[in-house]
Image (cartoon, rainbow, N blue to C red; front, side, top):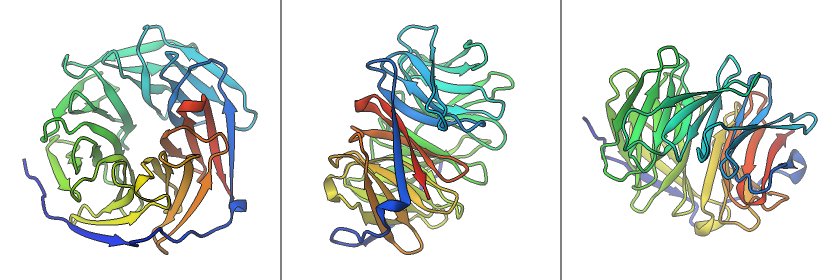
Length: 328
């Protein structure tokens, strides 16, 4: 198992980054959720354009029609599942991680039924974030269990691979255009890469003290991450191992968290340490930032997903809302 330990750090901007764009270019719309204490954790975009979310505090999944604001809830049949991450497949089924019950779930929105895929190792009790690759395989992280997993929906087979670094706490995960999954190691200063066929893991070392929490990939296969501990946006070139950093607009206490890349190549993320929370856009071509305050304050946006049209879905955990960032 090969580990890539060489890195080059280029820190751009020793003061606060330059801000650009006008507020008129972005509109943030939010909806109150019908159940008190839902604690929406992650959003997802479905094939029909609907916004889905996990209700971690209320043991449910929810669907919002962004055009009308209509909300429908789907209670989960297994009490205490604490749904965390979710993603929609091409057929419209909604897959989620049962963070407290050690299974992957598949919801049929037509009838509300849930199919359960238990993880094969009892140590894998807290599945976290999940994503599909182009071949229809489901990849997921297990934070405290320290695993990366792969589920084949056609057979139900689940394979688990331990992260090479103990207590590395695999967190956010993405898949690049070649079908290779990359994941954050929140418990250490590393990004992991897992071979889609052999499950061999390569680790890339980040600057000392970095704690990558969420991750995104742009069309040039550059890997982006939010450094939750140090207040930086980071970029990893997997071919060279080179790491480039930019200080977030809110500074070292920004606590950057949820993130996504839009089809136009821009990188978006939330600053959970800012009050109110902000939505930040970074343009890799110009090196400039833009920042917008979330109307409800956000109270920790833990994940962001981009729609095919280039808008963003967000979940505002602490204020019991979900929303869309509409980009003109």
